[in-house]
Image (cartoon, rainbow, N blue to C red):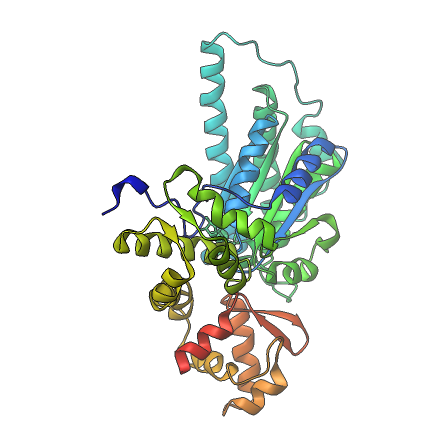
Length: 392
Ligand SMILES: Nc1ncnc2c1ncn2[C@@H]1O[C@H](COP(=O)(O)OP(=O)(O)OP(=O)(O)O)[C@@H](O)[C@H]1O
Ligand SMILES: [Mg+2]
């Protein structure tokens, strides 16, 4: 219709980079400072936040920043199937192998271009590392050797270090049983051992708030080794920018009143800002108007919430068992926040034992996270409104 307006500039999605990344200067600054302080200081960061706040996008931004500082980023998203010692070793091993291949290719290109390689090299050999550090298991040692050779290659090719960036890291957790699986500690222990030997190696673990508890419970008592970075909704000024700036290159504009209304309605959550913007854009196309207005929003709201439920909430519920879904549905009748198991026991017809087991499973499935004993929160922003909408 109004072709002059150009293309829809909003990017609602999973890990889809926005045209304008609003309000993440502070974590980016701290990430840069962390790399600068390595290897004398341990470069470990934990990034947590709710669904759709922009963790994955920030992690990619970290990777770009790392390259600017001549660090080699190794970025991957962990899967539920990686939650065993063996699968974790294989996954991280493959990531490192891939990183080494990339480094080798890059080095060839550089020498073809006739650029002198920097003279930095490792002051340490693998034999010296194994003498200084005792590894907990053969797997730990294998992973350490993989990490070592990747850093070694990176340095030989003129990089300052290697930083591992792992998304959805809440999926990997240690079992309590001493003889059980401890993939989280298996990942952290060799990294920390090599960092103690002052290897320029960084680790960023990113995921749902559950990650914090997993690290506290990890066998390696690793929580205090990480700088914590909590990613939340945007302050209203930043949220306004996230909403308005993408329109910059287009012929379309927004009424200030509408922008403020959107920011208030979505409470500054990045995914929602992109979704509201995108839907308003399409509605404006259809209506053939050049301005976003409160009137346009009012007319579009049912479509927006329809898409929000379909694209954002429903896929997260779809993977849960009927019993888990039931319990979530009953949680809509409880006071919130937080969601208390005592209230849930009153609201649900299930036995307290059953409620407890299901709560644990909902945490494992990433639908809830545990704040403290008996208190939980939803991992998706405004999830309760969704449950109420669905029930009503
Ligand atoms: N700082 C930001 N400014 C503007 N938009 C953003 C910002 N951060 C993220 N977004 C947008 O928000 C959406 C969600 O981003 P992303 O997938 O990174 O979130 P997430 O926290 O990784 O979510 P999940 O927990 O579901 O993986 C994307 O559409 C992205 O473009
Ligand atoms: Mg993500």
